[in-house]
Image 1 (cartoon, helix red, strand yellow):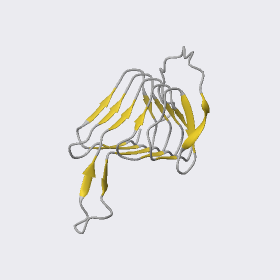
Image 2 (cartoon, helix red, strand yellow):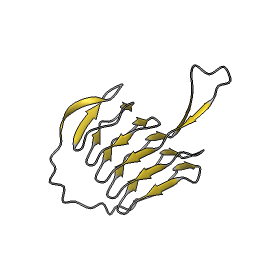
Image 3 (tube, helix red, strand yellow):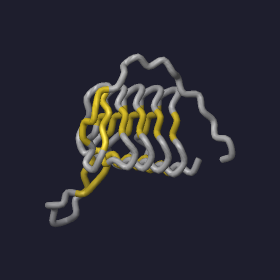
Image 4 (spheres, one colour):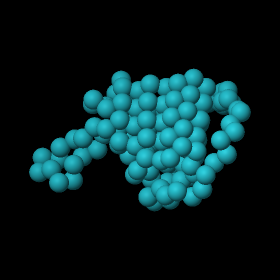
Length: 133
């Protein structure tokens, strides 16, 4: 599926979809933890490592990224280190997530901000296989 996985500290739950062109950066001591029934659309970037902009030596920083159950991350989203997407969160396409979300919220923009609440009655389970890849 042309997904780039960096590092070994990545855990993915059941019934998850991670589409083509995604990057999961679980290097260093940080982790990426993806819950169950999570849909990650194409070209999403999840970063668990960045650099301290105030460091004279370009010091690397590691922070866990947690995506809880039933989240939907739309195309071309960037999730920065230290973020938790609470259960049921939807992130609109093209957003940059710089702070953690509330359960069943819909967020979007640069930086991503609260748009509305999501219906909590989620009955679907992902079972998707690529057609041509």
